[in-house]
Amino acid sequence: MAPDVDELDYAGGGLKQETNWWGAFVIGLAGTILVTGIAPVMVTSLGAAAIPVTFIITCTGWLLCLFLAELSAMMPERTGGSPSYAYPAYKQRWPRGAEHVNGFTAWAYWLGWFPVAPLNMILASFYLVDRFHLSTASFTPIHTPIAWWTLGISIVGILLLFIPAYLGIRFGTLFATALALLSMIPMTFLAIAWIFRPSTAHAGQVFHFHQIDGSGLFSSAFGHGWLTIYIAFAFLLTWNVIAMEAAACYIGECKDPARDAKIALNLEGGYGVFIYTMVPVAFVLVLGVKALGNPALVDPKTIFVRFAGKVFSTGGNVLNWLIAVMLIVALVLSALNAIMGCARSLHQMSVDGQFPRFFQHTNKHGVPDRAMLFNVAFSLALVFTGGAVEIYSLSNVGYTISFVPVLIGYFLLRKYRPNVNRPFRLPEWMKYVALALAALFFVIWIYGGLVYTSLPNSSLGGANTRVYYFIGWGILLSYLPLYWYRKKVEDPKYAEEAPPAAIPSPGS
Image 1: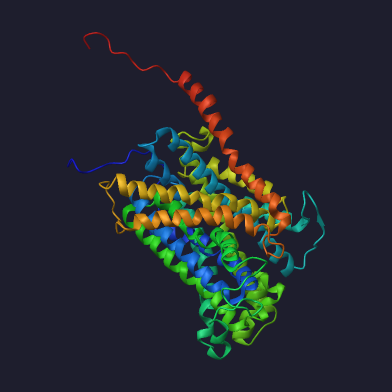
Image 2: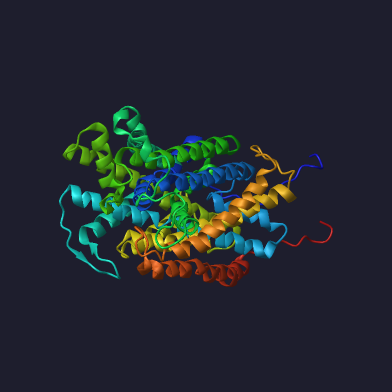
């Protein structure tokens, strides 16, 4: 080997490589499909001003996908996506600290993704209850009332999704492909439908980017200055629009990761920017800023039905059913990835030695079944919180911050390990973009989160959710006892049970 060639030292996840770029892309659409929930919230909160804010933050998600494409091609055996690439970047220079970087990053990523399953199943159950006119009789397990039918549908849905997740990446890809085709094709069509009925679109509603009350883009809102409020809503946005990075979770299971990484993640990022931008644009063009001030339109089904009814000059029960089915299927796809993707992150963290050995186990289909079962168990427990607001408020404590060590790690690898083989290589100056992106995400996480969860009129927040924000912090810190259990209990026990190494006899 040539002396100027460098090699990274890392452990692979050991999962079966049975898919390709399409498998990573289509399951990763679970992040892109979150547009169904975030677009209504943004346009009903900020009006046309939501468009540039959403576009800018979504572009950071595409940048993140580009960085992950390079990292995943460099480390093709790693599984679990973004958090799995931090450890090798820090390991050589700071071996002790690298373990905590790895553990914290993977656990924060898990906290960001696993709640998507209970959240989405609760939302899907709302539409099923509405469409089938089921009883809304409820009880209050903790703080928020939850209907008995909502509870039952959510629990059954999560348990059923464990089946395709358990049956391996090939079956999971087929299942996700069906869900993606049923949801993303109509979603894409709706995003551009106004082009075919130009008389329903009014460009003046978009340009100047007025807020709901008619004020300008750089006007104060919600009692804060424009910059503060846009950073606050960026906290909400990052939980959604950068989730297209989910495709990276499956690169380690691709047959040709060096090739598949750049295809899957570039395609995911590009499509993500398109759909996350065009859906809000379509809402503003057709419905108008003033009409978006109606609080009822924060509900995805309500706003999509109202939008489609104006574009196609129709309505009625059939349209309601079509929109409901599209949204339910989209929510199910995203919930599937919530069970599968971050389970691979926990599996990789366990292989690396920072998490209990329980999570290393894989089944005969080559997937981390115990880690996914762990996600199912916690998802079922989280259903009992009763509401999307509570789940969201604690979840995003972990998600955005999980990318900061990864982006700094990218910079370190480009600066100190320039000769590592990179099948996909970004321009050299991109390492400084990675640092800038890490700084931006940190500000959004630490400052935007505090502001957003204090907004009394926020559609997904409010002062009464601040307690769940701090519960999220508690969950994030619970990584430490799990790490200590591995280091102080399991590792010494395993060392005692392992047979001693053979000592060669003299002269052998």
